Image 1 (tube, rainbow, N blue to C red):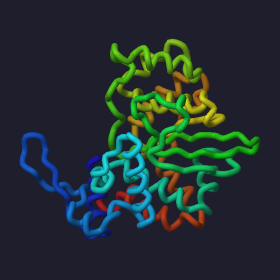
Image 2 (cartoon, helix red, strand yellow; image 1 turned 60 degrees about the horizontal axis):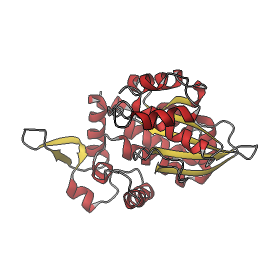
Image 3 (cartoon, rainbow, N blue to C red; image 1 turned 90 degrees about the horizontal axis):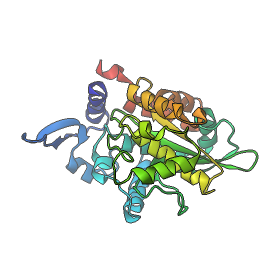
Length: 292
């Protein structure tokens, strides 16, 4: 995290020519933090945390729609926190959403090799069918819906991570909600018997709930099939552990997998329509050479 915080500080100062923001540690005086953008700079240059004006416009409109729909989205983090995976998700999938010529090649290379078409790419998305919900505000960081050669619709439910860990809240392990999640877990038919209690652990809880939400979308027939993908740094051991734990409990372990950010960028560089974006995304998020 220290290395990538330094990278974001470098990018802010050298590329964006912006000042650091400030934060107040608990019980301590307010101080600057290099991976935060200064509020006055963001006010003067809306979209400063995004790789293009189009991505910034989409992030703001999507944030407004999520909040209006009763969802949870920290707009302050989206606009100011350069180290957060939320703006990173928009910088990745918001760009892919707006680059029609690049969608199918990259989706085939990284997420669904059998895709014939891409029907939808959306950030901060929840299924729309009334039966496709966990009623706990769980949402996918990004979602892709593809059309396969047999006409079926496939959902790729995506969780993005940069340096932060998965949520430590243990839904389903608490007495007041254990029955609710156990019922959804067993009805999904995605998981092996007796795996519920282990998956409620903090290491797998968030990804397990994302899987339950994807399973609910499949079960309600909002989509014909679904998989869950974590997009994270290749050396993110926490993400790898979460994926391994959830996949091991599944009837079909292929329903949950990890796609490294480095792999996404490498494949994007091979797509003409995405090459310039991929180079800049790599400089912003992955290339530590500037700070070594």
